[in-house]
Amino acid sequence: MVRGAGFGERFGRLAYGGAVSAGFGFLLLPIVLVLWLSFFSNEILSLPPDGYSLRWYEGLATKREFTDGFILSLEVAVMATLVGLAVSLPASLVLVRGRFAGREALLNFLMAPLIVPAIVIGAALYLFFIQIEIATDIPLSGSAPGLVAAHVLLTIPWCIRLLTANLIGLDPAIEEAAASLGARGAIILARITLPMIWPGLVAAALFAFVVSFGNLEISLFLVAPGETTLPIAILEYLEWKLDPTIAAVSTLQILLIGAGLFATDRMVGLARVV
Amino acid sequence: MTALVLDRLTKHYGDHAAVDTLSLTVDDGEFLVLLGPSGCGKTTTLRMIAGFVEASTGQVQLNGRDITREPPHRRNIGVVFQNYALFPHLTVFENVAFGLRRRKRPEAEIRTRVARALGLVRLEAFADRMPKQMSGGQQQRVAIARALVIEPEILLLDEPLSALDAKLRLEVRQELKALQRLLGIATILVTHDQDEAMSLGDRLVVMNAGKVEQIGSPQALYRQPASRFVAGFIGRGNFLDGAGAGNRFISRQGWGLETAQPVDDIATVLIRPEAVALAAMAGPDMMPARVALVTYLGPITEVVLELASGDRLVAEQASGGWLDRIEPGQDIGVGIPPEAVIGLGAEGTRV
Image 1 (cartoon, rainbow over the protein chains, first blue to last red):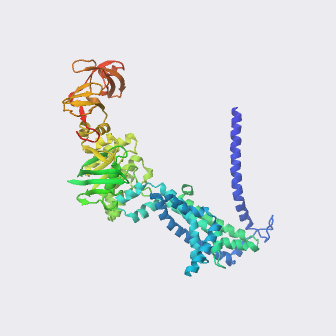
Image 2: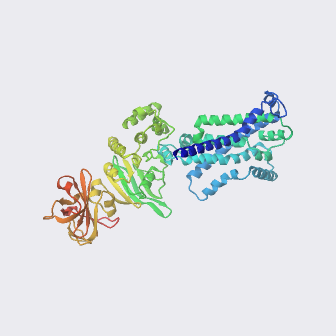
Image 3: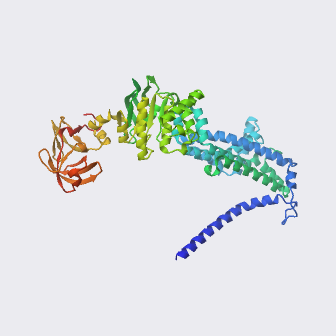
């Protein structure tokens, strides 16, 4: 009986380990494939490859659509992250500290971009920007500020989630102690509150950046002809060519985001904030 | 000299008055304790003095200056919180230096004053530690140093000992008392713990439902409680309901008691357990009573007695002698000295 129970337990543990490994394998295999493909020397993808080379990476430097796309994506993502944080921090403070009617509704409203499909947001913003342009002559669609504004919308739910989670765990007495020692509001925020929620801030910035940098659906509606973000450049390239260039671009993108995660982990410890 | 005056201070939350026209004064160097059950308004009162909660009406005066509408950072009040509220990202030194840096003191002065403050709480050697590397008692001592270093005009302590374990609580309590005496700083402590209140306070303010029940020295509150609420909150006691006339009180069950003070119109009397006289046998001035329960507590023994009238009485005596050998069911003698019978007014009224 005891041996039977031991066997059942061992079998359960093995099955569990197998399921977890299979899950991770399913998630990681495409990424590994992309990394591998990017070093194939032949233009038409085939297995096994004829040989390996770095030509797709070398070719990238001369492909303007990718370098320009990368720079635009980077600019938009950085701006959207900064603006998203600037908007979300005061909102999170009010949501956590305030006791007012409609608090829950406001929180849900700010979370809405997570729930509404991005393609719907993109289409709606496009129509909205056109209407604004008709009414005021300010060309928002196809402009960088319009694109950044749209991406800010995407970053807000992530920032608010992570910041409120950090603020809730913060003992209000600590800020009161600072006040009693002579610190006014702005000093308390800069010297006490922000340093204490620093892990949340870093994590929020990272998530906001990743979400914005990788966004395709919303950007599709809002970029000007000839000026595209990296995800759109990839999509357009794929429409008429299927060589490992895409794999090389994707590999660089994965490395960039991986570096961001690594830096965050070094700075604050990812496990503590997510 | 009076350090702090609260003048008809009131805080409303909607229709509910958390603190209701509270008036009291704290003298220079005095240790005042606000004591009461949770929800009695003691913490709200403290928070109004610190400026964390805005008073609805009434006034707070600190050394003659009206600070009712001043924000907390301009009040120059030291506050110590229940959960220490240290800045977790700053060293002990920087925690204590925080208030001095806000006052833009020169670096050399900050160093000497922080060192002196840490010396007061015997933590000089811990200046470079982070708060979470220290025990609860050490953290609370850092918090005390941090509050004192700014030389506040008054020190407010919000249940500062209740997060500590029993042994540490006693230690920090004694240290706190010595420190307060040494510095001669006006201090208000909020607590629901009567032992803490009795041992620390020069004067105690017993609060109930947003109002002051009684203010007085620990001795006065124990010996002459103004109401059943105060008597029940400070120490333990036997409460007898009945009717008084002249110097005689008759319990509802028909037990007659002589009293030292007239008890006309008094409906309840208090007899402290230690004031009940016990004898191995009934005799003159000692009526018979049956032992219902004996609890040996080391230095004292607690005896629950059942009287012939049906009244029950809790008595406490120093252990030893015949008292160590009594058992439930046994008959012994019990006497109540007239001066031990304390007449109580109805709830909230003073006799």
